[in-house]
Image (cartoon, rainbow, N blue to C red; front, side):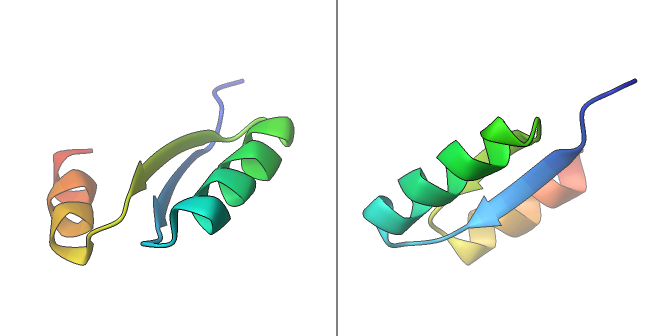
Length: 46
């Protein structure tokens, strides 16, 4: 079964690191960006 992909948009680096760690422990593929505009581009690409 394919891993679920999650787009994490968070500009606080410490919080983003913590969230990524926890999501990956739950077997999510995490794509992170601190920027909303970049997040929209990433979402359209995938």
